[in-house]
Image 1: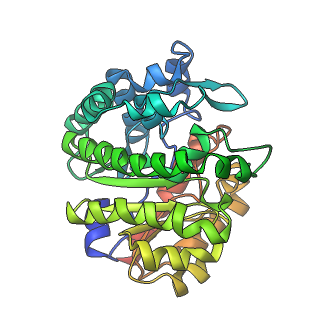
Image 2 (image 1 turned 45 degrees about the vertical axis):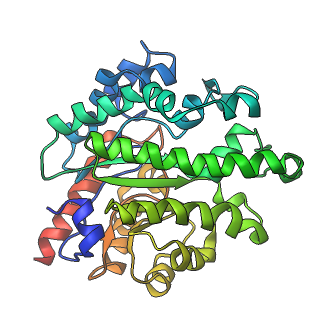
Length: 340
């Protein structure tokens, strides 16, 4: 077994570590038992004891190489003064953005509001085997802006004109979000996390001529800070297709998470000097073994003798069977064993 941070720094190819985005959550019955008694999602994220317990639930079930702290990317706008509510079958709803309220926020209050997250990380690190990584995360500034300004329309479209109407506000907010993302990362690493993933979940909604401004540069600033602090960092610019090449060349993260629309062979041939992660469509975990097993083996074979972390191209779907997760973990682990 190799810790993710070691793989990311040393680009070790001796085995394929495995973890899953959203591995701690809604597909697990033990999580649903907690959730039914804790309706307020933000309060649940701020319950250090329960968020640590949820983080460890999949680790108890499976031989995963990393835990990822149970939290949410919207904890940053929450700590910066916006209320956040999660509506079933709809998603997050944030209160109207108020620039004056946003400007009044300070580092001390921000860190205090999120201190339960850091306590949860400390609790988890104390209970987690030393051989396993503990991943923390942030939402990339652009993705947070999509939620903070309610830019997303029906389907995978954004109201870009609405954003341009608020251009001056967004310019200011962008800089602040980079700053507070860095603070949040530092606090999480100090608490006991050893790796960070930056989720740019809505990067694919950015028009090409705005990618540099809203995707590449903000991620680049955060990654530079992480590298300066020797914090292993994985980026997930979901949906940018072949712009993954430009992103990788400009941002230069230690790890690059592939979404399920990226061709894995293309990724291996075009994304250099980086550890790749993921790519498998989460829907395969809902299919029969005759479809699932060949799909998993395909990724393992393509990335054989290449620095690679097995994961999905997005989060585990709620209808996924815990038995299927176990099957995939065992398959990856046995594949590692056969390589030796």
